[in-house]
Image (cartoon, rainbow, N blue to C red; front, top):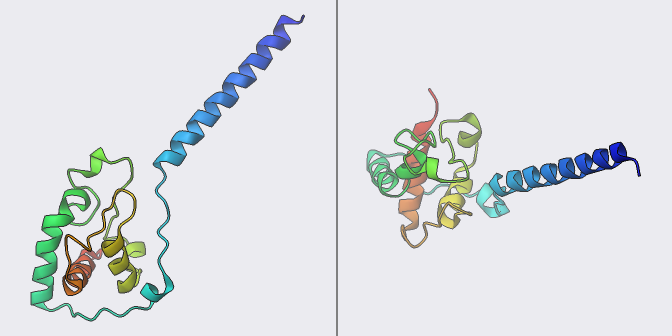
Length: 140
């Protein structure tokens, strides 16, 4: 038996196991992709960015969102570091390019670590006000 050939085989097996373990960890930390139903992509926001709506949105954001998404919506709230997925950064162009209906869907339905807010914020108008407030994080 060739000891060198056996040692090389063992090394390859150990390498393949290490690759499989690394891939499985990466998969566990990769957030799922939001699947937004078509009707939300074209849904119009029934509210306006009035001072009252923005005030309501800010109050709801402070109560329900700030701990993960941070004061300025950068995804850097105190709870963010404890999660194994990244919190969204609301100031990015990609985030701001989403339709209001898409954001409303995400707030309403949640996904994985992000909870659904339909029960915590039962008023649809209040959830729309939250969407209005999230728009204020647009990078300047």
